[in-house]
Image (cartoon, rainbow, N blue to C red; front, side, top):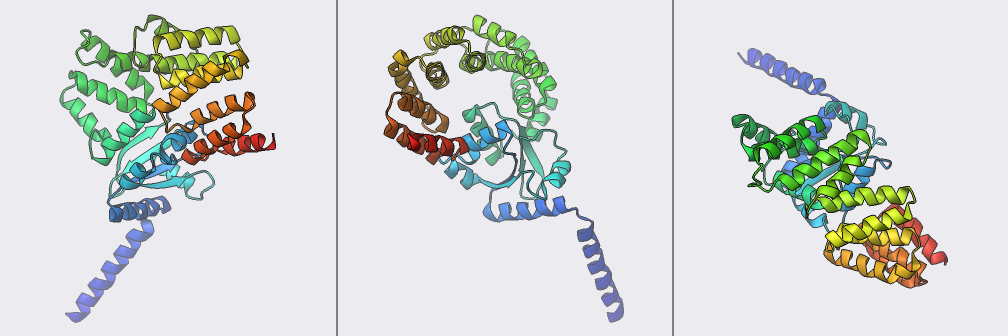
Length: 344
């Protein structure tokens, strides 16, 4: 009998060892990370990024390495960062069936994926809302899908799933549901129209690279809460084309419509600096300072003000502001800019 038990124990131990041996390196990595997150009572986040990935850097700047968001992130999330420089990167990429570099995977204590996001549109508050929901187990992807399947005609279910598809870069499905929301809620009862219209326009730009629909959107929009984001797309395009008169006209138009938009205030100030409209620098300073007061956790806005002061000859003020921005997020460009200021 004792011999039989011993044999069974040996077989069991052998089976356990075989199961462990069958685990891939990626599975072991995720399991260990999930165990650490579980001990900390946090959601596991695997952040895929690369230095050349603009959305990745945006997420770091606004969320994961933003000093003003650090307390929130540290309280609810155990973040594991992986880049192409890490040996595990390719294995994890295959393990999660990724397509896009800027992917963020959220997992539970068992290492089971509960949600993911792909890319980043710069809307920090919207992304933080997604993270807060995930941290409290609300509106996670599978739950949203389940609710939608339970009642596909429900406007809220359609809208929430459209958002999920958009955040996962599943643009065809996102657009289809956004359009269904617009049709189902023609009376504007749910207040989803602003976002739906803008997202459909943004998806068109992502697909085509053309800003025709974005221009139509601002032409037709009447106090649409998402219009400032559309103006930023248009202003950036005009800056890149070096179209001074067109750009400043667009800035002024956006400012008249949305004088309290931190996005337009900052972008208008940056345009005045970019085109070296020196006589308007006091106006630019007033705008960027208001932008900072409305959104003090955006590091790049401090850089805007710093460059204007530098152009006006106040190097010390420029250095002070850039250091303040660097305290919020250590952008590599800030280090280079500081060197330029300090050499003056």
